Length: 254
Image 1 (cartoon, rainbow, N blue to C red):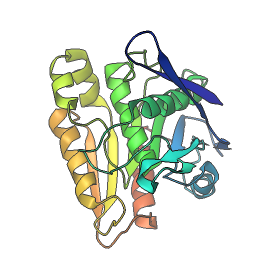
Image 2 (cartoon, rainbow, N blue to C red):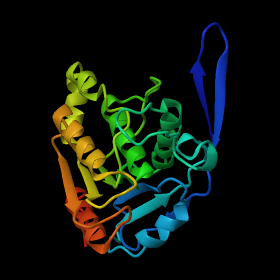
Image 3 (tube, one colour):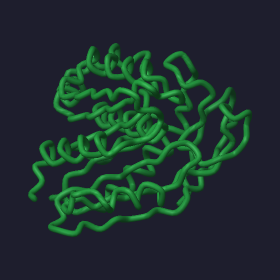
Image 4 (cartoon, rainbow, N blue to C red):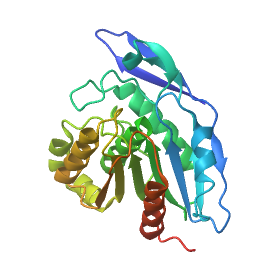
């Protein structure tokens, strides 16, 4: 699937980038379908890597959708192309945000969820850059629009981020302060963030700061879990935490 992103420039000229998303892998629910979660991989990975893990989890009521990001030049790698949900040059709150790329990926995820039955609860989760994209989607949900102003079409019931960070964090609290409705949605959206203290790719301090930024901005239903010795990967203790949290938050049956 492709997505056209545009950014205005001076005069009448407009630059348009087309993002070609890779293959999407789906893990069907083994029991009664109660929730659908789009799970987003990390930088340079693909959807199938996570679909193989997710299908082993004791969550029979969840349908997992695992898309693959576009292959694109990434500034962090000196412009070398790899799968990435958006461009990134520096993993920190001070680095520039690729709003066009973030919007394109958030829209791709929303499109995947928009065809689900109306009685199914919807969520987004991810690892590393996938977690960052999930958190960006959470901000689109509360403001009911993408960064470019287009309306955000789905209602999310859960956000999970492993070893990630929060893009576009600098003005989040100011934006929430001027919108009572957005503040109400932020306060009620369940978010689970997990991060390893030994992460040498996305430093633990970035994950912790992201959680603090979200909490101070008004995301009151946020849980932050840290894991001693955990690097930039996941472990059974962490996935067990995700399973218990999703079961409780989404009201899943056994």
